[in-house]
Length: 430
Image (tube, rainbow, N blue to C red; front, side, top):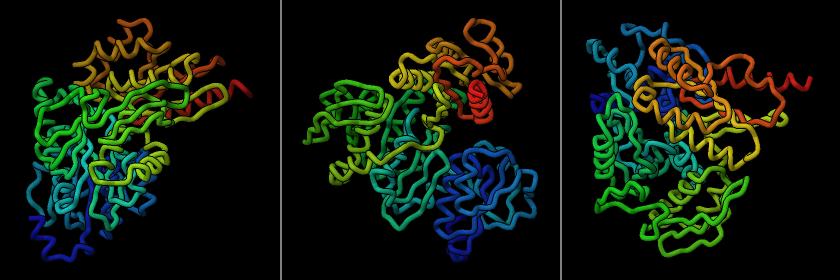
């Protein structure tokens, strides 16, 4: 049906509605479609989210969900996120086409050379780093709400495995950064989860896989720390601003590379990006110079400070990600007190990985939990009751003068509490 619509209506006259437009994927798609020249608008909750700024930058109009009407929407195509699938599947066919996000993305990217970045962790940062490597000259759909269309053969795309969404894509080059069981509300077990990545890899022309999770496929090239991998790295030493590492990129050896990013996983992502560059025949020196310009993406280890307090705003919502953040801040400020402020997202995630969450919490000196959802209330209370270190967040957090790093971690909105603790720290000096 979407093909038929594009035949009978000039593409630049299409009016696109996105339901859930502030979601990180839909916001990026909205920006992409706006750059393409389409008339784009959407609906979401009225509270301000971190994707608002990107939508406003593209002059995209969005309203609260309460303004939406199935009968009166003046659009040709309505795109919705998987969170609203049931709502739209129940509705009878109307004059506009209804289509889910990943299905629409798969359609519009046919014919392009897609660099598809997948994996349990690190996708958005890797996409951002690849974008810097290409000097922002490709189209982009990134998982922090950033999107762009330009006249290029290449598109850098974040590919999420949830509900097998990434099996709609057929990348020119696929990237698999990690395979750690997640989304247990959909995947039955690790074997089921890994098999989904195998299916994704088989849809790629070529795929770069982190060597710890190698899939033994004919089109697979390994990246990691094993010396028998096609691309590998060896970290020689770390310091408070990054790492010194040797990189082995195909037939080239780069000795004593200064990688000025905190967190060992950033060395992995750096190597993955150079692996893509090599695979595309890009000049490696050009690629390295461009990657060094990469700063960060939204809500991924975003740093700020108030005197002797450091604040980390990060999307981390899984135990291994929480551990990665702890290791990163420990590398950066080893003597500072580490404070975790965490807001859980999915009930299934904290229920199925309860013990792993507690282990990651115990790395920190203090732990405070936030929760606004009734479905998680009992489980969050249990975490507090069973673990002496874990407490509920309160307005007194941050009212101490000692050197500290405050890590605000969640896939949900947590910015209000971050600002509150900043104000508490500022008040100590007034």
